[in-house]
Image (cartoon, rainbow, N blue to C red; front, side):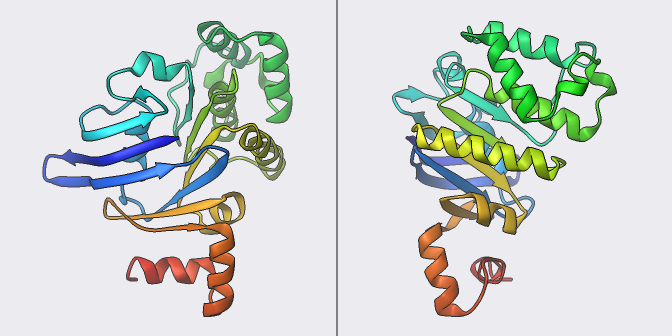
Length: 238
């Protein structure tokens, strides 16, 4: 479980996250949605140990995310919207390097599986600097998935993926969920997050204003005669 307690993130005069408390369950795909500037990336960077200048506490199981960042890394896979990849390595070289750092057993088999799933094979031996945006996103996700992390965070990372890669990735994340992993997806694309996630969390101006499961949302849509998009804008007052 990822436990977030009274977390506050402040950038000078801007409040990104406003004393937020939340528990994210394992064995579920949890979607975090909100407008640009709602605080999604700030929260997920704090949960990933990237951002440490916050008050409150975040724990993954017994791991204190702020105090035990090195320990967290062995359990974490994180892919942001725009990854800083090593441009003068090939895709395969980067995956091998990350696999070695994470002491991944059967590393070559794991790399072959991920490159096949994400259709990276045609480009895996080319320099990353020559990759398209979509190929960089696929590689970033492959890097995050190496060694099948217990906590997987995809922060707007699926933008630019083609339909086949999305289909295969969704199936793989479902398998991870069934094996008890904790998976968080952040997106402002409402139909996508609605389709993929078991629980949806609506973030607005640094606060959680709605947490709802997919079955609860199904019932609410039927009761109100409105889809998720319409309900979302109602919840955030738009």
